[in-house]
Length: 582
Ligand code: ATP
Ligand code: MG
Image (cartoon, rainbow, N blue to C red):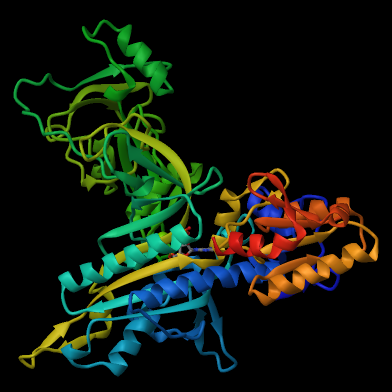
């Protein structure tokens, strides 16, 4: 196929768009791949659509290869199935809810567990029908709080979602592993550098869960990995190993101290160390009680929640939110302190919280027998040696404390280092949550019903365009991996006379006949403009037909390495075909 730049629906931009913060967004707009149509809504122009379709093709090939079958649901969905699972309200503000002309409630699908489950229930009844894996490549809608970075986080985006249906846990594990393998092959073929990390399963519910993160500075996900083992996890999924509980016998009594001018942990520690208490204190000896408020979807009223973490750590709101999902979490405001006078700002201790019916959850490091310095519920006073399990008993633990580089790896091997990534895929074992909601059973060999167990697997297809661009670009423009490039070769005619144009036409025609797709710059603009566009657009091989043609040579430039080679004009078609076929 030959695509002529002289008629291609494409206008490249010399300037960066004002709203673009990350390289992929900047370059995809400048190179004319996408255009913004709405907040979090993007139009795909010809080159962009080709990249998107190339990614879809790789995804479909690998899904088909593991035996998953493609189907397609509407994006416009009735409310009832989502009410049956509670997600109509649990999804919160992220769900696009709409009404039809009769006033009936609908939603725009953010993910399709309900429909898949109901559809399988409608068609299948016997254990002999299972297992089955179904997928779709479809437009999803989520009213994201912060649509961002072009197609990286849209409110309308393309997702491949698949679901597995099995009779038992071993079957589910096998389907999960098949998907895991397919995802590895997909992301390898797409030329991505990525990590597989342990994940939380979010609003979908379920247990075993892993995310595929494309490594990128601009990524919104922070993950950690161990220096010594294969352990890697999204920060939200890091589970703190609790230290062993200690005996209570012989621990000193709790004592309240007057601690004036100690508004911060640092000033408190300095004060304690100057108070002649006979031992050294650090921030890690203090217990910081952070007050937040939570609200379950559909609730109007907020509920106070106390969160206790060692004073040398901050509360990580993303971790806290993940731990409390689907509840909404917000920081308390002045008005909340005013409405609850028992809260002495800066000096909140565990006792007063629980005495006033405020649930109190602590970091897993706060175990029975550990002694803490914490607020004494009185201005300018702290209590020393407040012992967990003796002087206070938390209502439970919560993973809210920040995870830090240098922390011990939860698997006991090595320490943690942190990096950032873009979530490109997510696989998890849902279990029976949806099968229970819709009573999805198969009739077993003994005529008894067997409850089906499910897995759910997503890939951000449109997000991948941006994720690949994040990893494959330089200061001049995009540098596509072959598998997704909008063309195999970018053929530039550099020169004014007819013989050069004719030579270019001939080479383009022959390449096309060999099945090589050619982006042919046959415009009458200056060579400088053409070269700049070729760098910006990012096709991996650039062929320049110019003055050299008179001597029988053309130039081949490798977009990624910048390396230029002169090739015999007679051999160019074979040469390029060889490069493309790899
Ligand atoms: P995120 O944490 O980035 O919001 P998620 O965990 O909510 O994503 P899933 O429900 O697991 O996303 O959806 C499957 C895949 O769809 C994700 O791994 C991601 O690649 C993609 N995806 C999710 N939300 C968006 C979005 N707003 N825009 C583009 N792609 C998205
Ligand atoms: Mg996810």
